[in-house]
Amino acid sequence: MDCCDREAIGWVASPTGYSGDDVRDLMLESVEKRFGDQLPSTPVQWMSDNGSAYVAEQTRLFAQQIGLQSVTTPVRSPQSNGMAESSVKTIKRDYVAPMPRPNRETALRNLAIAFEHYNEQHPHSALKYRSPREFRRMKTASS
Image 1 (spheres, rainbow, N blue to C red):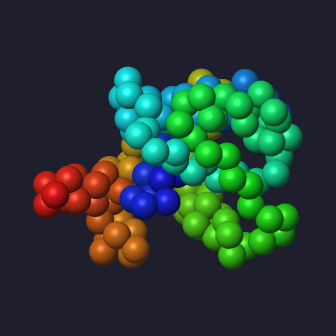
Image 2 (image 1 turned 120 degrees about the vertical axis):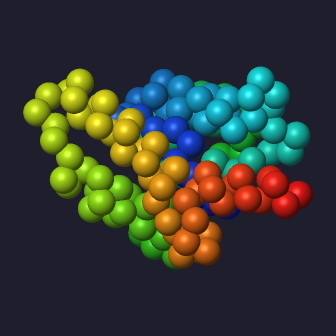
């Protein structure tokens, strides 16, 4: 989730939890989607909770190599991860709850559709009721 424009840049789904490999794949996918084949010119914060997959030394080193600065939120601190918690609540309420998911393949396909809709169509009050991508396009056009 990009904190500036609220876009869900990348995502991973698992019924059992996430490994360090999953997190590193997500990091790389996110950097590639946002910056193309160039690394960020200055470190970009990658904020996460204190889960073992996020704080593993291999994950932190990989983050540095691709231009990310790993930052973890304090334990039980809704002030520092409120945006993430709000986004999760929105995705669950507006997309996952009504979503048919009779099997893994259907669920993953529908999640991809849900995130695309969220990024292209879902209005956010913090973005003057624009979707994340609409907001970014507007900012790019006015620059």
